[in-house]
Length: 525
Image 1 (tube, rainbow, N blue to C red):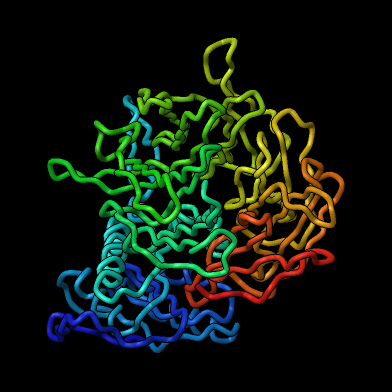
Image 2 (cartoon, rainbow, N blue to C red):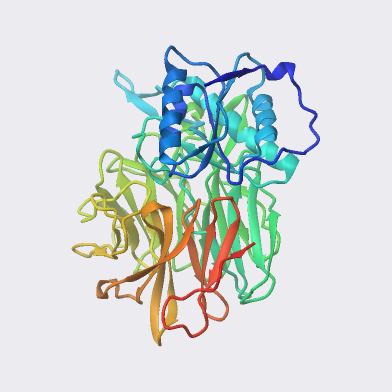
């Protein structure tokens, strides 16, 4: 079931060429065989999967992985040969790069490069990482080798990092260290649509050649900071500018940390502005600065950018950039301990709100800026129960979308409402995206997209501002590796985008003057 590979004895000529692997191959990279089992169990049937272990692990690990692979085959997974198990030492990034060139993956799945710490009881508050250190080293080697592979071959590869200490049955959306992109289709001031997807080597962009399409140019690899971790926030304000926000691994005096970075695209198809670091709340304490959560962000009515992160103590820290570009200091919002799942959104009063899922259960908490008090306030009386991996800002100002924890049904909630509104559709996973202002049969409507049962993308619609009137859904027949995206093009037509199971973006447009949600054939970009 396993085979040893001494990669130091078999160096590959680095020509930039890679052998073609199975289309859409997912390569799981772990420290030991036991670590691959949860990653394997989170994938839906039919996915071609390979496994690479950087160590042999303890007694029984290989046998347990063999049993898991056999069960996966029975469920319909296509297992790409036997697992690779390294027999010897050497540079893990070099070893992995050789394997990537051998197998040609589309996706790389691994664990958390920067595991969360837990509080340690004692006279002083301390935080310690309890994960075996080899897990983080293997994950970081996988992230870096994937970047090198894409830079050498030019083939996009996408990386997912999963927390180790999570339910093995949980879908990736619910267990990811870095949230999967839920907004990545935007319309610029000139009317052209753009796609922004984070690959191992940086941000890839596709842009319409003319407003309304149908032709696109790309992918274009944008100038991106080195060591950008596999997560990306794509944010757009009333000015049409697209802001990208992520986490970068930084090094200073031999110590490594994570810092929040941001850049802006001011015109469709034009180069990004310079990436700017805004540090993180624990910049001066390096072992803590490696463990912050992924940022959430929103723009207020004045155009100021608000960034929020989960800090090492599992509360929230925030920082604000005004329209002149000046940043405030990090501010600690004390209150309910939260998970790495937050949605920031423009509030009805012109400010910004934040909803976050509790660290310990499905409870949620709402933060808002109390203008009268001149301070952030916390509301724990939020009548929602959030399924992990499903929380996102709604396209309507002042609300969030999420899946109800007990049923998986997509819901909408606006702060102050006594209960959320169910949106129907089949139970699924991940965030539901939306675009308001589409005209359907003469009525202004909000169009939604979600991954339904089995991961198949569904498209739904309800009257603008009235989700309680009912939402109707239609299946699209395709699956997406990330949350599907939706926007309106320059002609007001609904455009849906997916990243298909072979790692290629596809788009479809609503047919002109259809009876309902009828779309043209999918177009591969």
